[in-house]
Length: 417
Image (cartoon, rainbow, N blue to C red; front, side):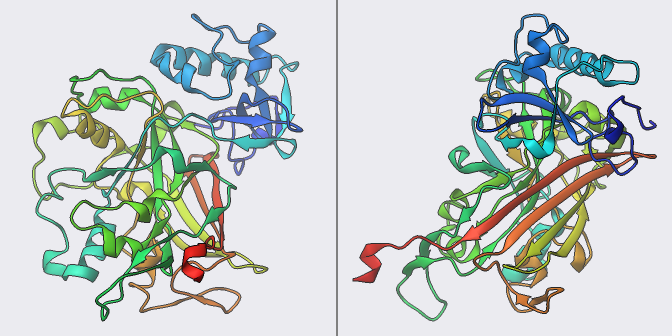
């Protein structure tokens, strides 16, 4: 597929993250006004509520777009999704209606694009799992016995999923030093990131209804960049036997633009060769991953950003469709607005590791930033920014950015007495 031309000039560059081929969905406001559904085109936003009210967009069963999030439209299903995309494309293509209501992105404040129903995080990247397992159990026992058979996951907190640009407060929690008998309570000192892609469920499923991988793929409305912030020292003390809890509950950041499955179709690719044959319900009918280039930048207070990792979503062992099919395999109902975190996306090289835990090998190999400072884990005032884009022939499908800055942990009066 080649670059599709728009009458919005800024969308027609090979380096523009939001060309007509993309059309990602978000929620924005201007000057403190109401939150409105919009679509990014070049450096502008098409106000879809205004377009629907003006009769430029008309959907069966609507209106859907006079809402502060995308949930109603997501629940409407794939036919409505396709119709909306087709109408927006016609509106913004060369020869389209140049009276369409546009807002400059620089004038807009971005908000959570959808109401998160539930959040599930997976542990589905093999390079990440091998690295972490090797650190704690040695290479011969790096992967647990079930890892090559099921996408391992845990239920997280929907209440702490925040949009890019929201500051993150360093969590307090219990930790225990290896040479200590008793734990202590205080700020996490091993605060980390996890570079992930988030899949958003559009059409729901019913209680007791299993899904094929193909059905699960059709249910996914789109994808966002996702940073599942992690307090590694809190996690090390609390996770046995039930897994992560407070170490992951304090914040998960997502990018403000939802890149649709339709926009990513040209970039489908296969999952890696299987070391163990998967059970039939997890087998894919075709390519289910995407070729999406990803990177992580760390900016210290008052300094410049350093790119600390570059990897690709095609490194995942399990696709989002497989994760969703496994999630529903017990009969667990999936809801509109469910968010599935891919798990940390790491590649085979050290420079492609999607967490500081891996990049610094548990803090033993500090990173040197471009400014000369070093890091083992994230310090107060640091800003982490994820970038992502699928690279086409003369165009790209950009995700925008997912960023967050770390504020100091709150004071607990009981700790000061």
